View 1 (spheres, one colour):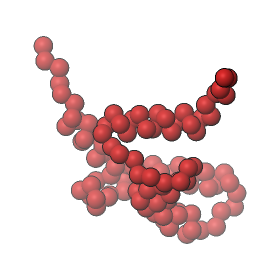
View 2 (cartoon, rainbow, N blue to C red):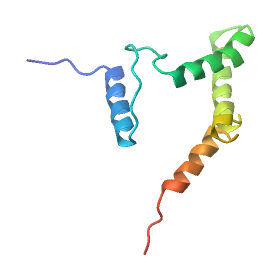
View 3 (cartoon, rainbow, N blue to C red):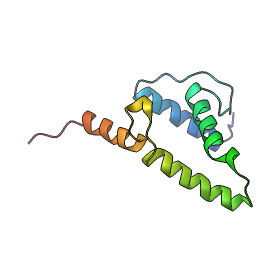
Amino acid sequence: MLQRPLEPGQYLSIRYGQRLAEVGVTASVGSVADSYDNAMAEALNGTFKAELIERRSWPNPAAVQRAVLQWVGWYNHDRLHSAIGHVPPAEYEAMHYRSTITPKTA
C-alpha cells in the first residue's frame, strides 16, 4: 500500500516526541493541533496576550510581527522569571548546559 508523505506538522510532532524521550520528559496529553495542550504553553500564551497583544491596538500585521519579535527577545533574554531564580530563560539555559557538559580530558 502506498502511503502519502508525512505532513510537516506530523514530522515536527515525531521529532518533538523523540527529543522529549531523549531528555527523559513525558509529554502532557492534549487535543491534536491544540496549542493549549499543557499548562506551560497555556501560561506562556496567557502572558503573551496580557503583556503585549491586549494592551494596544495594532495598525497592521507587520506592526504585530515586529512587536512579537521584540517581545520574544525580551522575554527570553531580559525578563526575570521567579520560577528559575529571577534570571532570564536564556541565562538559565546557558547555566544548565554549562553544568551538564563534562569537559573532555586529555
